[in-house]
Amino acid sequence: MNVHIPVSSIKRAAGVGIQAPDGQGSVQVHQDPAMKIEGAKVFAVYGKGGIGKSTTSSNLSAAFSNIGKRVLQIGCDPKHDSTFTLTKKLMPTVIDVLATVDFHSEELRPEDYVYEGYNGVMCVEAGGPPAGTGCGGYVVGQTVKLLKEHHLLEDTDVVIFDVLGDVVCGGFAAPLQHADKALVVAANDFDSIFAMNRIISAIKAKAKNYDVRIGGVIANRSKDTDQIQRFNDQTGMQTVAHFPDLDVIRRSRLKKATLFEMEPSPELEAVQNEYLRLAASLWAGSDPIDAISLEDRDIFDLLGFD
Image 1 (cartoon, helix red, strand yellow):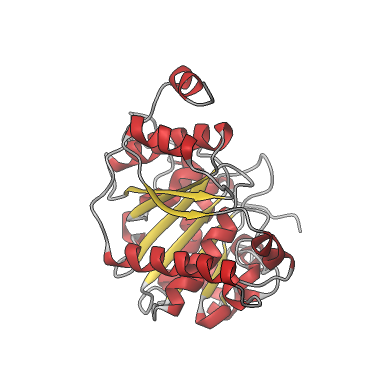
Image 2 (cartoon, one colour; image 1 turned 60 degrees about the horizontal axis):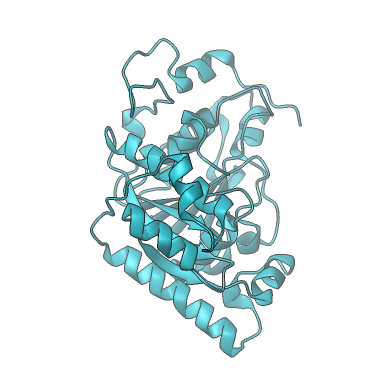
């Protein structure tokens, strides 16, 4: 489907002509203050592309639902594959659905873009503009606007934004303007830790004008965490959960299922319990982490083996 996003809408979303500084003085995507998510605890999940953010987000949503919370997961990726283990299908994106009504949002109904998944988790795929033609911040803004117009946030306890790749522009950082805590998914390797360092910088920039704070790093697909811990010791970052690289996790994606629906085994039970522990900890709340980002050369010199 060729999606046309009005240029005027993109300009408004991207802050064109708006001179108010955001973060380090840059002019980034500005969301309408009236669209602030209230009442729910909001988490934004970031990390290097392919590191397992969608797997982590979906299983964390499932874990929250299993401790009795009403959960909404919002996928922020044009691939719209954030929620398929919850819904068992690829859902149409908000942008695709809006295009069918020529971007007249008042013509949409909640069932046009919100799907119920595993254990009552509500799922939305925000999607994204066609490659090279639009702004991810516009997509996030339109999604939150629709959710508020249809009163879908009023009965929600937890909102999880699953955000694509690294933070390279204000559009990708837009969920930080809604989140209480930003979580970073990283493996015990140079590339994902390097991306985590950039994400920390973005969170700190957004925290100057918004309520978002650093929630910690989720170590994923890693037997060991020595390199992550080395980075943590230098920056003040903290590991809040650790998930090893188990084949059952890979198989759950192929089966289009959450880890809570897979055949029981001792190793699976350990992973499920870690997700439940993480969900309970995030719900209980904790002091924000005051981490600092490093210079690129410092990370290069820090990581590795002696």
